[in-house]
Length: 172
View (spheres, rainbow, N blue to C red):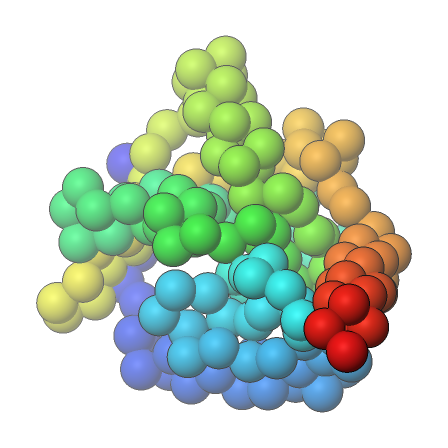
């Protein structure tokens, strides 16, 4: 296991700024959440999205860093998102504006299968008070999970608007 030391506050600021940038760039059909149980919600729905932002150069680094555990054995990453009721996991290389949008349940299942099959090691990153365990998962092995962000989000938003309009007509 390789140990890496992280700067929690620097990473937190980067993530918060990235969320603002993401909302500005991709947020036409989104509303921001507080981040404790998801970062965004598709307007008019209960469909939540967790955003994972990476600083790495997408072209030079072929892996996703998928957090598995935080502070010991508490679920982290997509498993934590799943537990919070998120439907989607958005992995964004912000510097190159490369977005990978996936169903969070399918992503968790895929990572479990890949770890068993390829024996990917559980690695660690830590700071003074926090440990995170993660896997390096080659993006190539997940490519069939990638959804087209705009098509999914806009379709879900439009369906919610149609339901709302229909329910409004029935009440009159």
